[in-house]
Length: 158
Image (cartoon, rainbow, N blue to C red; front, side, top):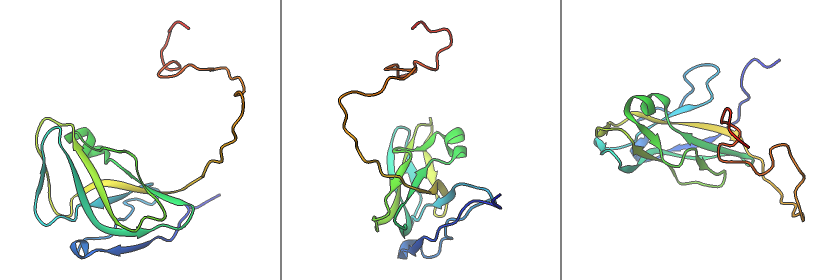
């Protein structure tokens, strides 16, 4: 039995505008995600309904076979309506640019971001690449072609 999550080494560079910020870290021994911070020079305000690209001041080199997923922080989503637009955002193993977070304000009030604020979380996870096997027809299943909520409605007619 494992004593905790598996670990993988990830190369990271602090860019000049993020040099004084802490590196992302797990806040508990079994946490899946690390918080990402805003590497901005001055306050940034996102009005309701607006999107903004927030820099982190970090560039990473993931090992082959891994990706990093950028996800919302649940507290910001619940309390402020702030989420990541393309959630989860994917950082591929061959990307070497700055990690940027695309936030949107679904709340009713402007949202102010300060330097060093924890704005999203990042999860590093293994990747499986699919190999297509084109066939004339697909095997039957109990579900068939039902989709878009067809399995989650109690008492729904077939």
